[in-house]
Amino acid sequence: MAKERRAGPSVRIMTQFRDGRSMVYDFSCDAERLIVEIAPSETSIGAFTAAARTRAAGPHTRAAVEPSLAEAGPTRGEALRAVGRAWASKNGALGFPTIDWELVSQALVAVRAIAPVAGSPPNNGEARFATPCAINSTLGLCLSPLMRSETTADISDSIAPSMAMVSSIWS
Image (cartoon, one colour):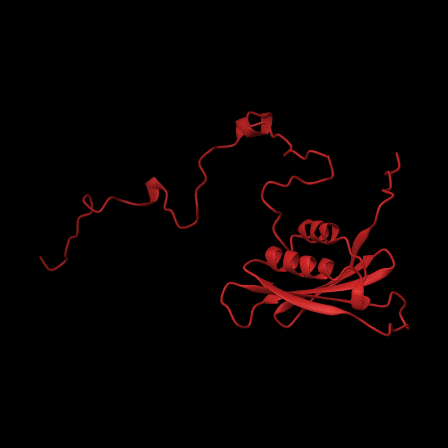
C-alpha cells in the first residue's frame, strides 16, 4: 500500500549539523531553501536565539536578495515561533518568501530539536502505543527476580560484624 501524498505545501529537512554552539537545519520548502539556526543566547542565561535565512534553491544560483532575520525566546520553540511571526509580518515584502512556519515547527519537533507545543496533538493521525510485553512469559518464570551485583557479597561469603571474633596469637 503506497503512502498518500498531501497536495499542500511540503517542508523537509535536507541536512542538519552543529556549528559551534548552534544547530543548523537546512529545509526544502517547496521552491525555497530555508536555513534555520538555533543557538543559546549570548546575552541571557536560559534563553535561545533563532535565525532564519533563505537561499536560492539551485546549487549554483544566487538570489539578488537573501532575506534573513533573528529573534530570541525563552525556549528553542518560542524563539522559532518569534522568527515565524516576524517573517510572516513581512507579507512577502523585501524578498521574504511565504513559508509555512507550522510545518517547519512540526519538522523540528519530529527530529526533537524543539519541544512540541503543549495542547497541540500531532497531525499524523496515527496513534503509537508501546508494544505490550507479557510479564509471566515462559522465559520469565524460570528467571530469578533477584539480580545480584558484583559489589554485593552473597550471604554465605560474609559474616556479620557482631559475629566476628578476633583472636590474637600473643594472648
